[in-house]
Image (cartoon, rainbow, N blue to C red; front, side, top):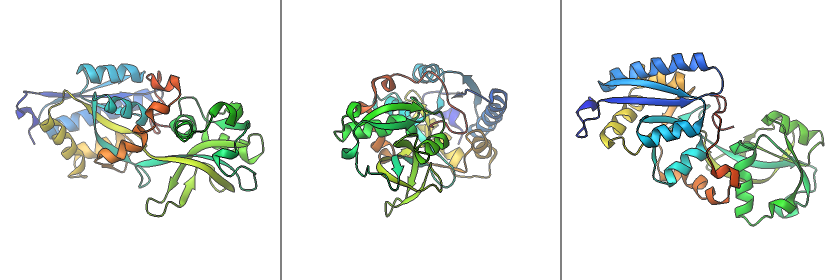
Length: 287
């Protein structure tokens, strides 16, 4: 697995992450991961921590960073432009994906998106994939007039706050994450927990987050990185990667894993087509 022997002469690998909190802890974990990855690959490895995703993606596209930890929308946008190659999806709670759902109380009159006429809606945050961006893109793609469907907007900052607002009648509908059985399509759990809610619309599945390389990274090195983190889960490279990305294991993605999200990119709100300026919490890069 001595990746320094690839034909391009690539002799080092640099890993980049963005963070908004826990900076010292993440820097320590990043350093441990780079040390272990470098040993596994037989080459130098170093890390780069930045505060903004646009800086991280710029570094990846310029070749200053070889591997980066990205949120799903940004990863899908960059992959669609041919600027990055997704190589791994972190798995947490036995899931690497989630869906987004627009929901209401079980006894509420709104059953389908066509019923939405000026309803009061609770969102998580304008940058939240599950709690704002993706469900709006899905509704827009489905022909829903967003402006007439929703009246008063509330941005509550957390998924549980959105659930409480809907449950308490302070909002008519809300947006949050949900997990559906991939075989039956049945709801497994939603961001409202045990509260009695009904799903009006959903979209997904969407990767929770994506580990990607720049297109400048040679295929041989890309394959060596993937092998180091998936073929032997007991090695130090894999162990330190799981700690850094707060994951249980990694899934190797194929084209279908980003396809549902890519199909919605052109229907995102205008501001979402630009790079997100800040990094969310490291334990949950997408929410």
